[in-house]
Image 1 (cartoon, each protein chain N blue to C red):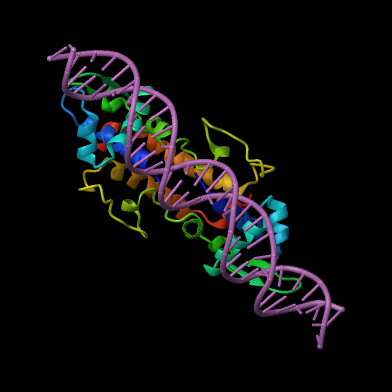
Image 2: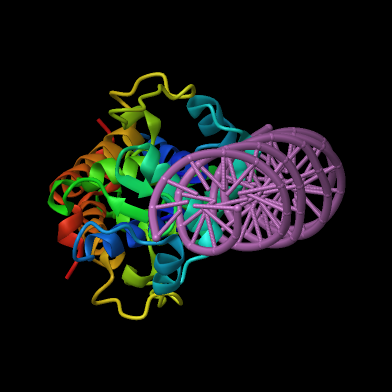
Length: 136
Length: 136
DNA sequence: CTATTACCCTATCAAACTAATAGAGTTTTC
DNA sequence: GAAAACTCTATTAGTTTGATAGGGTAATAG
């Protein structure tokens, strides 16, 4: 299940990607437009800023804006920040690999085998989809 | 993240699929072999029996066994029982569709667009992978 | 320069879910 | 008829999620 955090984060990013210029957009404007709790959105945008996707400007006329062009924002990177590892199981994760403590041999494990396929296909989607692809 | 329930359920199914005949296997044997809490496994096997994947035999020499041949057990069906909907978001679910209460128009929603792709590719995997494919 | 705007941070909290455990009950077979 | 093994209900600790509250800090316009 996709977390609300990820859902809201993606919605905010697409909202910003749809903006004309690079003018900062206020949190409240995004929250209203996308029906998101403003306070919750704050923490999400903050994490997107800290991870280099967004910039922010304080004071009157401030807000958040995309740092890179939407065509250069890979969904794989966004998903890792918002949702965490793309793999459904740590033993098939590229960036967060961890051995299962119960499983004696990954080569034999059926779960491993299946989840490896799932990871590969999802990764391909997330790597080939840019933020710009999400706006109609 | 894959739940332990699903993980254990898949492991139990592959364990049963590896058996020679159709002889019932005791819960305790599966639990020991796969390092699973026996009581927890009980509830999982029970749900797999109720959904038609497993049969059980009581009394001495009893246990669980696969009802169908492993080549006929589609992972899509197994996953739906163990993990729930395959879609990461209800608005792209085939069997559990639900409209997002916040989203005014799915055709415009970027999340919808992305998750549709993910669902399609995952569904293809789960539909084309049989239980027999998971045993090496 | 100062008031306003808007970001930034910490803490808290209820609800839901997960994983595991306990214990008793029931059916079947030898 | 007793043992073996499945079946069921209830409980619980722990974690995560989503949301809220409230104040603090920085920057900008006028």
